Length: 210
Image (cartoon, rainbow, N blue to C red; front, side):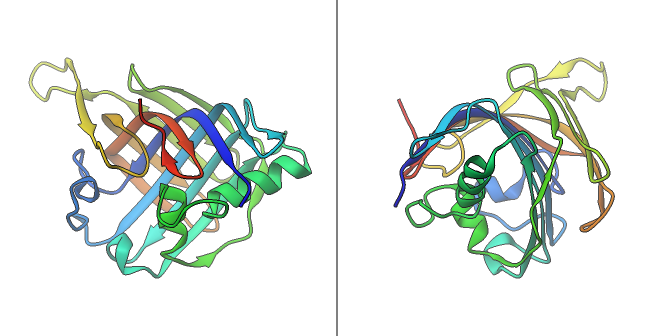
């Protein structure tokens, strides 16, 4: 197994309401789970291959709860990545070189039965987890915007967090609102649903904790 690790930032938009039942070992509130994700790797490596500054994205569709399987996925890899970096990123994203179920990549890969061909393309992704703001644009495929949840009466920004001491994706995530449109291959539309903003620190063994 080739050891990998990275620090980065993510936005995930899924079809659940703001709490996202999956974070609490419950069933998805819509009966299915659709999700769009973007990650920027601030610093990282897979073996001797550096991954600093590269971006990845994904679209997922599960007809029921994630653990029930039969999912479909589409991966996006930064067009700036060279061949070695592309290979490394795809291995990480498909749960390879990772302890069993140690990261969200490994967990999700185990539930996907249809993996579409990866797309190597421009990924415009900016995310500030602490401000709960992000924008993901993958031309021709994905448009996602994330923002803070707002108080329904005053319109003021509202902040909430989810803490998962034993989670496989993050230690702490800020929760916001996000909307996504996927135009082709796996078309979907989500409006003002769960937005997850997190600082990531992952390696072959799972979440790196202080």
